[in-house]
Length: 307
Image (tube, rainbow, N blue to C red; front, side, top):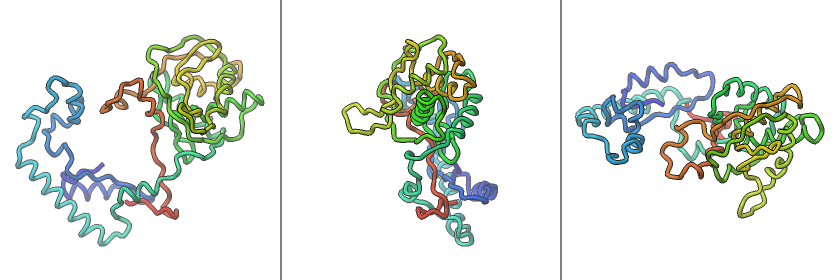
């Protein structure tokens, strides 16, 4: 994100460094909260102001010393004015590839988030890379890139369950799986983690017990296609995050007899996911459906992204 309060020269320098070999979407901030704050309050655990309020519930208001003098704020807006004039009156007049993009047009450019197929070979390769990055960390990845798509944690869960269900039914992985709309876990159970060791074949068998249900989009008070709150494998109850890790390891395991250790896994990727929320954590399962949006290409009938 570029800040107009840095001035026209800073905007020129930043845009000049952008690789123009493909379409770029640039977020330019106008009138941001940092324009009003001294540097000390623009970083760390005291930024943004709402984080300061969360961390100081008895005195949530910023202290007066956090605010910049009025003259500094006026200068920031003067810089922003100069940056916008250069952008609209100079750059856009000579470069037709640069233009503003409305939120409505941006939304219309987003590719359908589900109802696409991914090759299991590509899913396995991406999962192998994900596991290397995951390591022994308790926080799971936020999403998984597979070819030209992103899978949210909920979609990872569904796609891996489909692949392993195929393995359980026919003793071989399917060539591809369909990523379909699924509902995030309805409730997050804290302190309910299982432990022990299970086989890859048991994980595949447990996946087969609910994989088909995740494709059932029939309207009911409690959706059929909801990620289960708990999964039982070899008599051990594990959380969705633990089972997601087990499915990932089973998917790339060299043999169905491979033994997998049930690891401690958090449901979320860190405190940053839970900040600025008013719901209690047990109701935050919806975060499992978040992922980056894929924009249509410039040649698409939907239209191209701005630069």
